[in-house]
Length: 343
Image 1: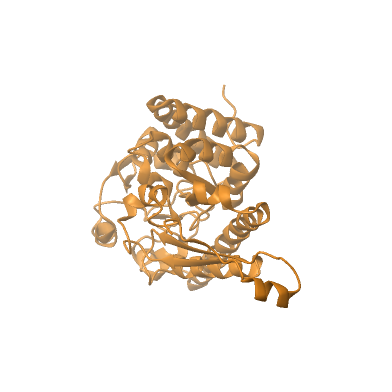
Image 2: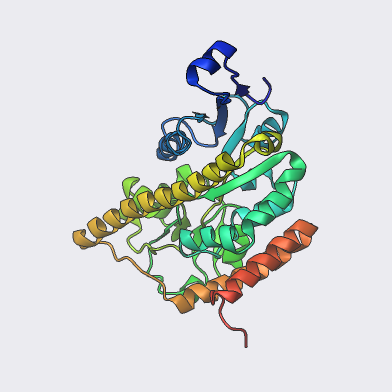
């Protein structure tokens, strides 16, 4: 069937053999990821599928498909709505062309210093309600959010706080990230990831927004940029787990709850897995004696967040939903003491 939902009604003889009129149901879903098959995140997503099977006693089976298996990464929203695939595991910002608010909620640069802050915003601060308010008109239901982790920051020069960003030549992707760093006084440039190492090595740039600490270490970036900032202070993408809304509405309540719980538990598992890899890499880097890891104070993190807020405010003007995201996010950060006080 179009939504891959299969209801197996046992024959009368089997009903009798089982001693009752129980209706056995089996749900087989295909979710497409925005990650390739060899990626660590995709391997973790397959573990989520196993978690779902265990949590539902085998009543729900999910097949995870690598990026581009059925449709392009930017087309999964339409594919889920049409029932071509049942759900997706993807970066919400891919759909900002349809609704600018998807871009703002996907990565409000500077908002988060820890994945748990974003998870709490989603689950208790109105984030999940916002996601469904935006997704359901497109035929999707938001189950929950995860993230590949808070990115560290690569730098050739010591960065103790926001003031050290003044005039810093850094690589950052176009859009919100560049705008926030520029507002903080830095001089961002757009470079592909493949050129980051060479540009740092040759002094074309002094710093880079790139990836998590362990990934940066594995790729040798700390060999040429010995002053990383960890934990990071700027970028942490939201990865949504969503399903076809009609399919969701047809699920029994206990399975809906099981799926929500599975994503919440997986999100903590994924972020903890990444954190452990990062911390091991940090300790190894420190032990080598050539790398100085900088950890910004809560005050400087709040100061950067407040600078970033000016760019969120500008982005909020893009659509009514963008304004809702800005208002809800700002209220959460203020309520939790995560914004620097204004003079």
